[in-house]
Image (cartoon, rainbow, N blue to C red; front, top):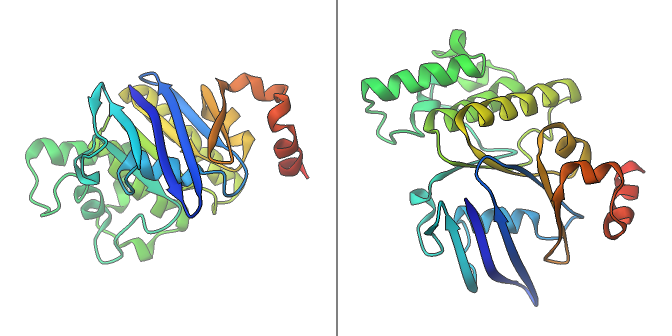
Length: 233
């Protein structure tokens, strides 16, 4: 579903190289120390930055030079996921139509997404009238309404309290399974990976060191034991 073939990106004086093949419907957590290249990897997939070489394909179609807004994916960041001057409904709608001119089918998609994320009763409100967790539900609802085959998560729930973060991760897992969405999630927390992922990638020094089933984290491979120890500490 998602393939990175010797994708290289130069950051300052260092080269990052990514090779991976992620199957349809997988939920893959991307782990690694700060500066390892996690957000860079997501930015390359999303088209926010361009690789120096290599090829990226989504659903067997090359997207290496495809503009970000034309790639078949959605992306959630930790911040800046909502437009404060738009209602909850319009925040979701803008993902389907920047002009906010919707078809009947698109309106139905938004209503279904709002129900999925528990915001049906808040569609006319502004984001400032909602809690932080509810604002993140708006952004997730927008992605659900767009129903793209690939969802990228760059630590969108890291600022939430543990119970709310657990709920959001469960919601991502459930909706991804229902829609058949492939998910790539950057996280600093191995326990988040274990909560929803089927596979994990471990990055270090701009390279994919491991790509394994998530249950391998129960007995961490030697290459990442220092990292796991730091996280526990």
